[in-house]
Length: 303
View 1 (tube, rainbow, N blue to C red):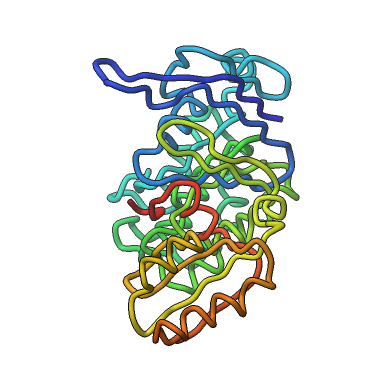
View 2: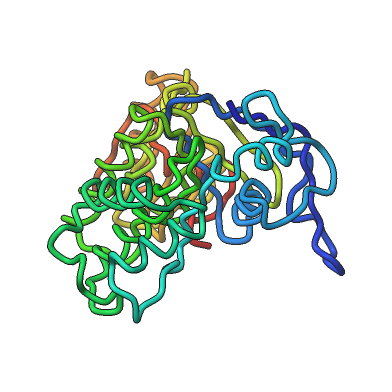
């Protein structure tokens, strides 16, 4: 559905490109996760897709057509729901929806039907007459999402859509977003919450310093032929043992090791015991998304 081929972008006077030779393929009918530390290039890529920035090199196609051509043919094809609140705080929920629907060229019965559908989808029926500034954080996020859906976009760009909401609102938003592909909307989802991406995304890409580090299905990215060992010790791991097993410190007393096979675990435990280094806990198994992210970027998602 969306094809991004060798796209690069450099801001004026910047020493390094914000994006460098980025290529991604986002299939129709799913939720696609886009992950990266702060400054990785996610916002630049989202801005290019939303038409807020012109691409400097490379090409972007939507449903087989160049992005600019596709947007001209259908200005409502792509919608962006930004991290910041994108509505007028002094207007009521219904006034905001009618205003932004009108900005999309909707009117009459079609506008009313779209507004009613958006209100029902976001479950805003009880607050339609309230000013947006009076809403809770969760309801504001729902209004943001409802506005983004007014044009029935083919591609919806969601930038941190659950920031600052309570657990109940987050659960509702994730359920709602996961249901969008069934209604014909493909979603690109950025988040600082790994568990959200693992819960609703079928494919993901991890980018850092403007480059794609890995892209594919969530199952493929999490799969590892070698067992990953996570352990926490009572004392720091001796340098000789850390070097022997190529251990990476994840916390002051936490370590991650890539074992050649599970048969190496007894020898490691014997070495630690001989050095008087007690093990507090350990886990041996498949990667989770946070482990993959840290291994590829050597940074936290929020760095």
